[in-house]
Image (cartoon, rainbow, N blue to C red; front, side, top):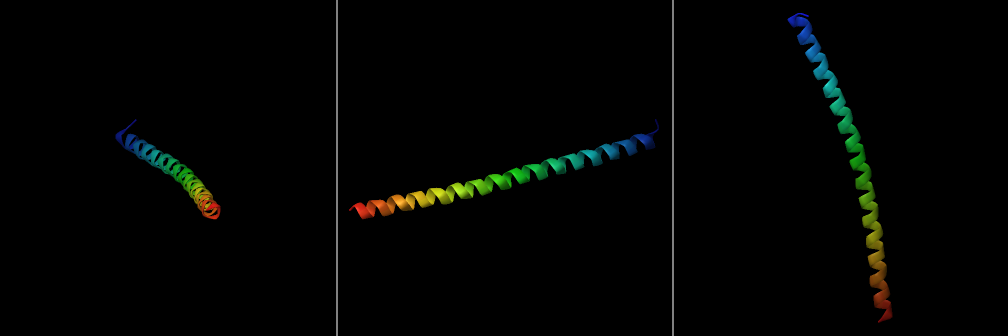
Length: 61
């Protein structure tokens, strides 16, 4: 195998690794987005519960 073939193979490997890394990052970003949505939902639910408790306490007085 000559130098040209080795260089070509190296470039191919770099390209493949870059593609794999980009795919992995895309998957990670998708998971992060799902988690962010879940956190927002839990935050809304928690805020609603706390507001209900505050209203209940005021009504009991």
